[in-house]
Amino acid sequence: MRPYWMEEFGNASSIHLQGQKARTAVDHARETLARFFHCREAEVVFNSGGTEGDNTAIFGLLRPGDHFITTSIEHSAVLRAADRVAERGVEVTFVAPSANGLIDPERIRQAMRPATRLGDSRRTLVSVMLANNETGVVQPVEEIGSIAAEAKAFFHIDAVQGAGKVAFDVRRFGCHLCSISAHKIHGPKGVGAMYVRRGTPLEPLIVGGSHERRQRAGTENVPGIVGLGKAVELAMESLEDGTMERIAGLRDRLEAGILAISGTDVNGAGAPRAGNTTNIHFEHLEGEALVIALDLKGVAVSGGSACHSGSTEPSHVLMAMGLDKNAARASLRFSLLKTATDEDVDHVLRVVPEAVDRLRALAPLEASTLS
Image 1: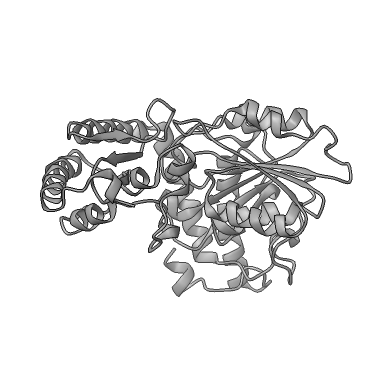
Image 2: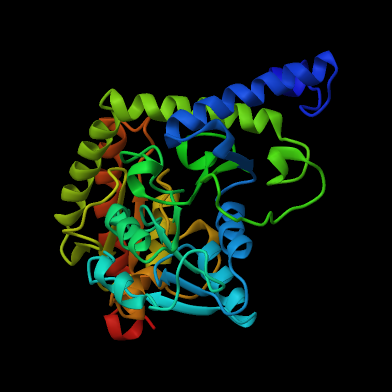
C-alpha cells in the first residue's frame, strides 16, 4: 500500500500518467476480487466496508411495499437497516435460529409471500450472513440461495465474517449481492467490496461522479483498495495451503482447554463454524470483568460484536439462540488470527483458568444476580 500514499498518489479517475498508474493498481485489485468472488470484474464494486455493502444491498433494492426477509442474528448493519426500511413501508420478516445458531432454510421458504416474484412491482430481498460474527456459525447459504431462486427473490449475503475462512463462490451460493470487508482478512480498515450480479437493479447509495461504473460515487481509496486486493490474495492462499485447517486445530485445542474449566460450554456447539472463532459461556461470572482481567494479561477477547463496544445490552445473537440475559452477558468470543501459534494458545490456557478462578472467588455471583 505504501507507494500509493507516497509516490503513486494520482487520482485513479484522471487520464494523466499518475492517475493511470493508480488506475492500474485498482484494476489489478479488481481482477483479484473477481477471482475470489468467482465473478466478472465488472461485478466487483469497491466501497468503505461491510456496513456500506449491507446498507447498499438493502436501501438500493427495497421500496415501500416490498418484502425483506432476514434473520434475528444478523450484524447490526443489516438489523438497523431493516428497522429503517420498515419505517418506510417495507414489510420485514425476521427468521429466528435454532438453539445452536443455525438458520433452517425451510423457515426462509415459509417466510416467502406467494405474490412476490422477481420482476414484479413488489420485490423480495433475502439477506443472510455467511458466518456469524459472534459465534462463527456458518449458515446454509447454498440451500437458502436455491429457495430464493425458486421464489424469484433477490438474495444478499453478508460475508464479512466468513470470507477468507470458508470455501467461497458466489455462483455456488446463488446470491445477487455479497458484501466483504478488508479488515476481517488482515487487510486495512475502512475499505471493502461488493459483488453485484449483472442485471441486479441496484440503486447506488452514494451518488455524484461516475466512479465504479456509476455504482458508488467518490474518489477511489487507492491504497485501501490495493491493501484489500493483497489481503484477498493471501486469504485465497490460506484457504488452499492448509492455514485455516491449522487455525481450526488451534481453536479446537483452545476450546477443549477452556471447557476443562467447570461451568463452561460453547455457544453454537454442534453447528458448522468458521475455524477461527469460539464463543464460550462462563457460569456465575460477569463477562465484562473477565474481558478486563484477560486484557491485563495480554489476551484480547470480546463480549460480543466490536460494533457494540460499550453497550450494556446483552448480545442479540445469543439472546436469539435462547440464552437469557445473564448467560449472554457471561459469554465471551475468542477469535484467532491466522498468525496464531501453539504458544499463543498455551498462554491463553494458562491465564483463563487463573482469571476465572480469581473472579469467581472474589465475587461468587449466582446467575440470578447478574441481570
